[in-house]
Image (cartoon, rainbow, N blue to C red):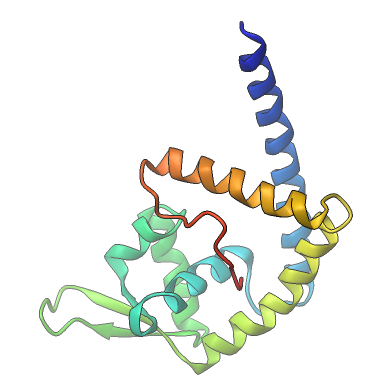
Length: 160
């Protein structure tokens, strides 16, 4: 095995553990006091960032990191909790849109307050501002490589 391959595999191992531990810490904080779980937050954020803050149910699975059945369960839960509205598609009565409503927007905002604090608590002590920018750029390159397209704008500002 080449030295580069060994370094890449070591980097993956560190990334994998860092990601898992970070997600555990964030999920624990969210479950204690946020209105949304991390998965619910991700789905609502995807809807919020869609044109007119709505997206077809069928398109949501490909726009997020979840399977179609996983998205269906999360959407049913979000709808029953009053965070989204289900809108029947006029051109195709079999299809439907998930649309963010005011309650969902409040839940995103309230969850982000806790979520962002946890992110800063994890990354703040570990990275300088320059390292954070380099880290974002590197992860963006990996995302684009895995997806096979440049869906992620490297160096783009995010709000949640």
